[in-house]
Length: 215
Image (cartoon, rainbow, N blue to C red; front, side):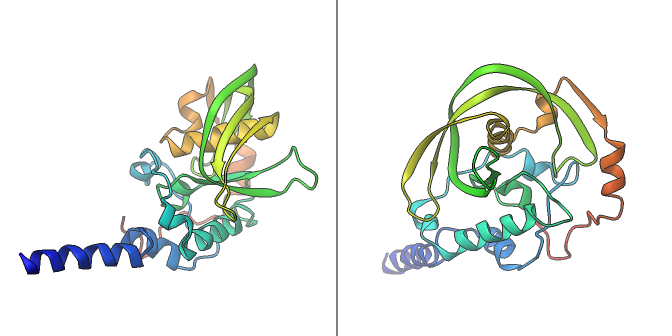
């Protein structure tokens, strides 16, 4: 009985020391890639189609979360990607973390949102063009609401926030939150087609997995 209790305590201690991150998550974060490998269809369907878990209180305080956020930002803004948003499943981690470019704010900054979700959708439904770093070189016309109310945990303060967002930024939030639920824009699109211009832009991009990548 004493040995069993010792084993359980050791397991709990190991988990606590790791901040609640799995060995795979720590491997992805610790790989130090710049930019990170971006998951793509159909090769990485298992990751992209898996609903993401919330970031725990222990993870929220961990250095791993801040490093993950830092690496995700460097990836989405890297010239090879040049996106307007990115979700953690797109770098191999099924956690509710996204970056969104705030076109509705001065300077159009990128901002990080942890445990983000949509409380409500409102306004007109528009059918606009969308693409995705994980679905090259496709584009599609997707129906989206013009406004959303989002909730999230602030990365720096840990405060739970709620915000009303409208316009193009609201569409980005819908796209990225879909990623966290295992949904891709092609699931919602009216039409999907190959973008010849994007295919030319991405012609030299390497989609090969890193040698260590074994989910």
